[in-house]
Length: 345
Image 1 (cartoon, rainbow, N blue to C red):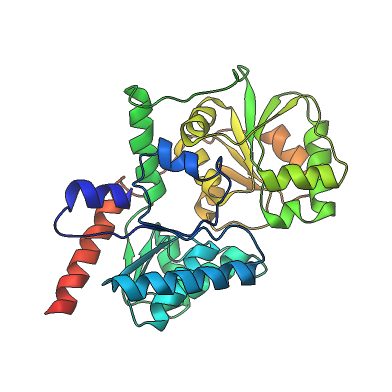
Image 2: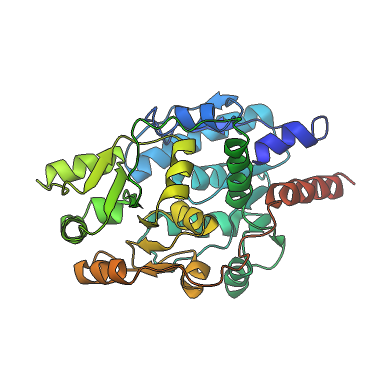
């Protein structure tokens, strides 16, 4: 959303060099999103691919540093909590280039998660911290970070509104390779804490297989397919396993499902955007507001808790505006322009 706004609203005022690290290297997980979401093609594609956390982050750090030395940007804008986020923040900070972090202040308070480490380090290296919610701002305050903090709303909410509008106006299409049933839940499962732990993955599969009152649609991440096969597990027939779907197909599934089951941070929010109850297969979440409002239930990988959550799934009567007014991207760019003007005086 920010890249689109730079080109639509701020041409001549801001120039962006878009760097794609290649962290999501599968064509179904990366290329299709550039195509469908009308994201500008990257100016630089590092093509890093998979690897251990240390190797992947190290190669990204070296590649991003070369780009920064060549381009000499005024700001480096990093998003979220991936290894790409960490590498971008580190490379910029070591070259004394100010960092702006989108989705700052999120905390699951589970330091064993790679994402938690990445987001904490990125926040402490950043000069501008764009928080999606007041809770994120409070998390930063507790860590002593108060300068440069802005509560702007969530760019994912901006994107949800924009792309759903394209679908409604038939400017984009969801090319479904199958017709979902009238009543189904949407399942996503990809986090290493679940897929790489045989006990957790086995417990999740056992729970899902035992619940046959509603059909599941499961666009399976390549890592999950591999883990399920390696452990000799099999999902029951009432759970339809498909290839990963594109962005608009995912929007279509989220809009048509009765509820969502996931271990993804982003999909938890998207469920909330669509007004769909969510069962989260994690022990903690960075999106605590969704739990506090009753739209999200944390079950971890516990078989009985998952079953109980399925039995009790419901839509609360109220759905507060937790994630801003749909103009987070505009507020981010206004703040960057203001900061750039101030530093040049």
